[in-house]
Length: 420
Image (cartoon, rainbow, N blue to C red; front, side, top):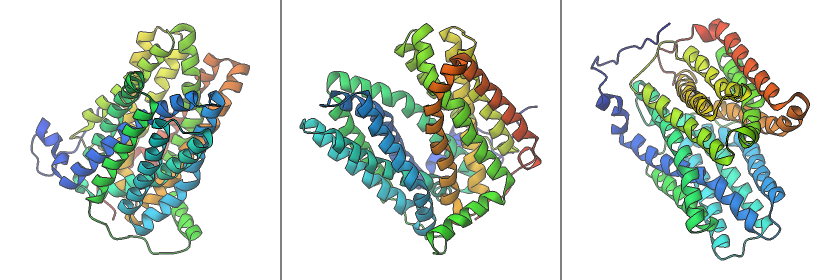
């Protein structure tokens, strides 16, 4: 089966310039610049905060864990609230407020670190503020983009955002490591704060969209969002599929991958290479989608999610580092295709007044089950073995993809018109 695409409405050849026509829309171009800077700062943040905590009095692995857990917990608590507010008052307002919180938290942390006055409890408190900002920002992304570009350019817009994600995931950690080496962790946190400030300016320049959802009680709003998911088989199936993937396959891969790399691939440098190549694959996958509007995008999205099984299978098979890197490249490309096409289908098919809540429920599943998988990966691998646990994850993913693709609501789904 080959990937067939519908011709563009103007029937012009898909030249390189035509494929990048989405950036001609000034609103999207402005948002893309701000989002690129924000993602770059986020890519630097984890490394900077980790090394900062390790250097503080009383710091150590335990303190790092507390800071990360506080941030994730804040995200989980705020996600659904962020979805409700996005649908009530508009994505731009919520995202702008969220980025102001992230700018403030990282700015204060940078001052504390650069003046050598930071304490662990302060870092934890600021991590909570950062998590609140992240939880509020996320649901708005799916809701905001359809208002920045015409419907025909949605897929290209999402592909460019995926390319940006891949690029910043490669550049961010490397830049953070370089700045820590020549300066200190506080400098990196300051750069992170500036990146959020750029995003604030970008969002502030966008027009305010009117609220699409009537005001009801928060629980009533959440119930409406849940009903929208439950009423669409393709939507709740794909949401559940991604959530269980994070629990069964990706969390064990992220936990056991570094340990296996340390044992037989060359240590931290080898694992860093694997993650960088994964990001490169995401860039390539996003670029390959530019100018394409595939038939049955939902089915292609789910088929592409099988790519996540490849690097875990490579580690389980004990192949050399070069082959693990190739596997990561393929997985990154598959991730870009999966994320881009799924986001586009949701934006076209789901009514505008519930997009924030739909995005929040999807993210909640990924965030909530992901940490559980991270916590269980070590103990379970101690019982069944690291390679065997990865093999089980691979088997699960391939089986789940096959099952999902057998469902008519997924296999035959084809979005031909936007829903507003």
